[in-house]
Image (cartoon, rainbow, N blue to C red; front, side, top):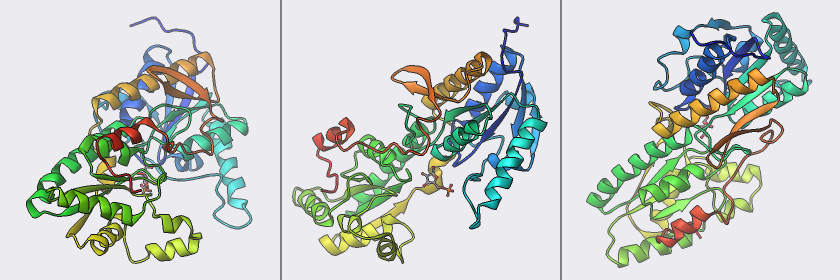
Length: 363
Ligand code: F6P
């Protein structure tokens, strides 16, 4: 048994919130194994994100709980999108009650710190709880890769592999039927997943929210491909992609313009057929991108971030989010990701890379 190292943290809570992703259990394992084996900390597992802390839905985590979960998809703790600071009724009374319940249970459970694994919303809530006096350490998790303060989030590379494999599969069926196939990827308000999977899968058109598309430019590109003898095309669209026309609309009109289409891919397929006369189909990859075994890269990142979080706990460095900076694991103040979304900068080199290999970015 290794000699335990000193730790400012004796007992902490851990929760996973927001959309799940491959790598969450690897990160839980990283935090807990380092905290328990190296520092002798005790661990309280909080169920279903912040909702579990409000309801005191918790259990003690022992080595048997966080061993053997490295390759398991999802989260052994469960997740929710509970947002304690978001009023569900007009007077915000519920916010006061929820935050009070969290503060009370944090005290009752004798937590020295709360470790939160999540996306923008989760880390923003973590930051606001730290402003309320709780000790919080955040880990950046999401397939969207849209968290400010870290160069990458675990979940992203796993979803990228899933999206790329799907695009590969669509090539053969599009070619067999001389069709245009639109595949829609997740990413919420950012285009990272569609951009990277589009480059990895050789998408002919890549549409991301950051570059509103012109259907005429897309049509011209597809017709030129057809005239050059390419009998099929693959259009990779981020779920948040929007047209130039939509950028000029208010929220109500934008909603109207999307009504009747379950997803952007179906509307786009119709617009492409109308514009080019080409036979077009749509596929929405959806929650496949959130499931299954984490990629090797995500396992390494999740484990590294997890053990780094345990070290922050041991040093009593609270109010921070562990992060990847270049190839190094670091940490940033929780205020850095709070309330922000990291979108693809228009001059990002991956956009130029896509264009360099003949990809149409919708303009
Ligand atoms: O944030 C991850 C994500 O998968 C987004 O890409 C997507 O828009 C959203 O979650 C879906 O949310 P839910 O799981 O609540 O349907």
